[in-house]
Length: 254
Ligand code: UDP
Image (cartoon, rainbow, N blue to C red; front, side, top):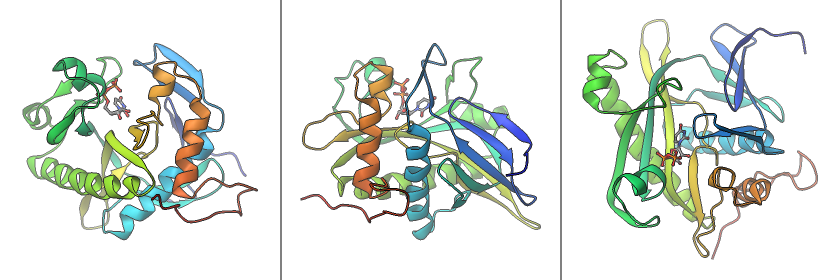
């Protein structure tokens, strides 16, 4: 492929200029970071798997009418997405206490929350992604009240849909992080789901064994990190067994 202009390099992905104006290529790396870059490593094959997992989940979400930036997967590590203006807010949706909420409120990890909780964090490595309220988002001009309502409503729909989809393949959706962007067309602007949805930004526990099947295996040195990502892809039916052409649908669990 001809040399492309690199637009941005993040921790897990590189963004390149797309083939047409208004498009971007997302390249998925094997690099993994945790604790705001303090821990760094490589999860072999992660980029290939996250590309497929995110393609699968974004496509299913599109089918139920969730607007996303996803256009199509291009190859093993790349997907074409629509260019959006990323809102600098990370939306975290939680169903079960784990990670920072477990610490903050002294809850045992695994405690079901009374209802799904949506939290906002300001996307800033420099500041260590501080937790924020709607007030900060509107006062600092990161988004308008209507944008926040849209992000909240979309997040809850994504949560309900993914909770069911993942339960069907034996995985509990404990919590996850979403990012949204503004997609500008000639005469309108729409809030759409952006970034990726993968075991890098979801907590997924096996429903039978409670085994962690996500980036916590890397964060907490639990071992078998590659295997966990592969198992998620396998259950979703997107792990090529004998090469990229050998794709099956999701495998339903009893
Ligand atoms: N998360 C993420 N990126 C971040 C922070 C959190 O993808 O910068 C995801 C994380 O994988 C988990 C959820 O958001 O699924 C909630 O994370 P938490 O606030 O518990 O922080 P952590 O314990 O992961 O630092």
